[in-house]
Image (cartoon, rainbow, N blue to C red; front, side, top):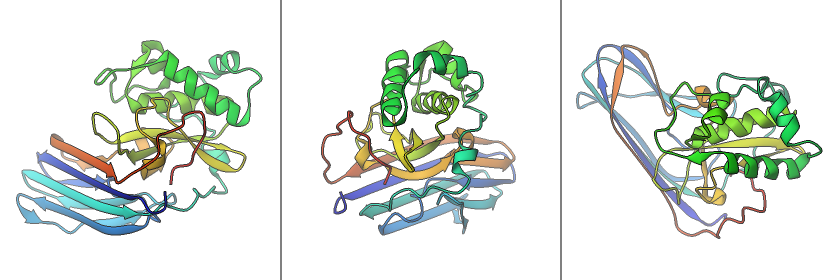
Length: 267
């Protein structure tokens, strides 16, 4: 995998209604070897220089204060190689065991206990992936931005973030630290930003993707956090914005077929 080239792009066009602070989370995470990268932002056609901020997990945020009628962002990156093994932080086994906005592990504790009795470690991860994949149907546009894991389970359908939130909530309810990662996903159809879970088992973070819609070995980390509240590709503070256009591409030169019977890491 270390010699495989991955190329990703993202464009976001916004309508602005007034002054706002825009925060983009579209750049590949810090630590991933880049052969080439560009980030451009224009407001009413004029270039704006954003500020880059990197969080504890390597999420790179590009933020700018804007005032105009339209904002256009373009991002391109060529990645040649893989990231190091995901680092386990001192507080990860505390932060990622707590219930969060979209992962109500406390509410789902009885369900988790009854469905996964006697399982632990990597066997538990495979069981959760299979269970969520079996219980949910992937339906584009079927969920609301405010839906959490409980509502997803009741609806029995959702999109990638819903699959990830339910997986995370079940794992946390079983005392397995779990978190969400936003990624570029070569092979995904239809192409879009993708969301997967990561679970901390045996001192390492492992990918948990119950959708099984993209080869895990080609995924590129963008953002990492408790749930979708921490990993949105765009956040605005101030005047309202309207999403007028979003396009994402992600391609990889070559990769082996994903063996879903084996676990892997997001690198």
